[in-house]
Image (cartoon, rainbow, N blue to C red; front, side, top):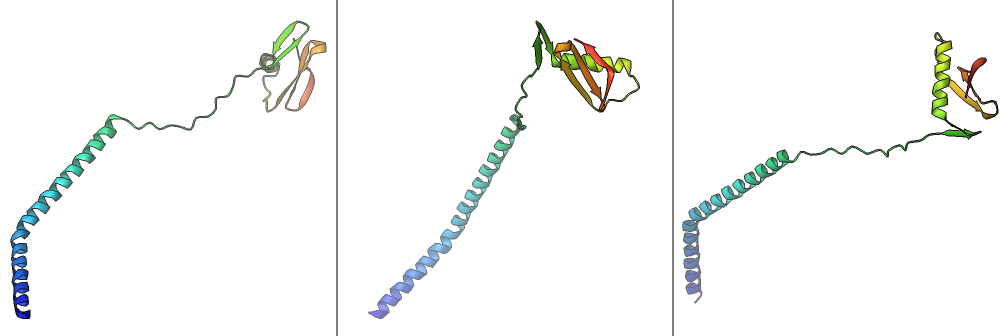
Length: 134
């Protein structure tokens, strides 16, 4: 009995090997066709992505800074309304008209409401003529 089983097992193994050898070329063709199809689909997908990327430009978003609010300083007294920026500009203009040869490194402005005047100090030097009437 053992010989019949061994002979039958050998015969089945031989038939299986023969079937594998006969099926191998067909399996290789199927594998090659499948591989080619997968490669082609991957290439097409890459091309689609590239085309889409060209159509929609990438927008670079810069870090947005918070917008500085518009500010102003006003002095109100005796029915007058003075904008500090305007008083400062007038004082600078007054200085430049009278002292054309002096370079300004520092400019300080003092508004004295009681005297209806603004005094300024240029480069740390206060002078009597550094005054404008408001």
